[in-house]
Length: 278
Image (cartoon, rainbow, N blue to C red; front, side, top):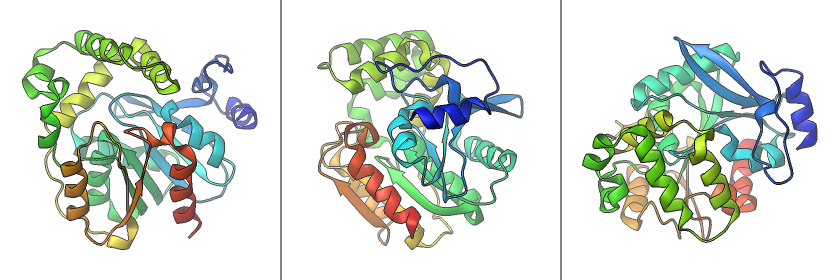
């Protein structure tokens, strides 16, 4: 991790902030930003000449949510972890990601999206199939219907709630969880590390999600990663993803919840590394 941050500091576009042992996900010094159509796309780029993996976090979190993959895999692969802007439209996000790849000089890359990030990653593969090596769909949904049983995903609630109030509501929910590394990270994000406007835009994207049309990439290029104990994506939603991509590789982790990149990183990283090496 220290070597990665040292390399990134030589490329950063703003003043560094310290990375502490207590907050290893604080990667301020490694974050750069690209200006695309008057919108900022912050990202972390580990550099190098290995296979390229673009990583997209879910509704809660910034590019720093993949800090464990950056530390464990960043020397073998070029990982580009992206904090996408406050935009709920998956096609607009897909177009923005294509422009970011242009800015970084990337013709093709593997793309991994987690939760909402994985939902709209499908639209990137739909619109730019020639730019996708492997599409990793991590803990995703194809339509949000099964999520609406959770009152915090209720469409009327999300639409009627101001960004700051939505952020405060989720902060209060996380506060009730048992103490853990994930709780500390989420509270950090919900305390302002991720803006309230960005958080609300992602939840609007979730509640308005539509079924992505059939992709024009071979099934061999799709990998589904899910967890048997995911508390956010119910079994019916996980099955719907498999039904949508019946020929895809499926890697079901026994544990990891909705954040296996944090809660079960060794198994998560093994799925990624095996595919990128091939």
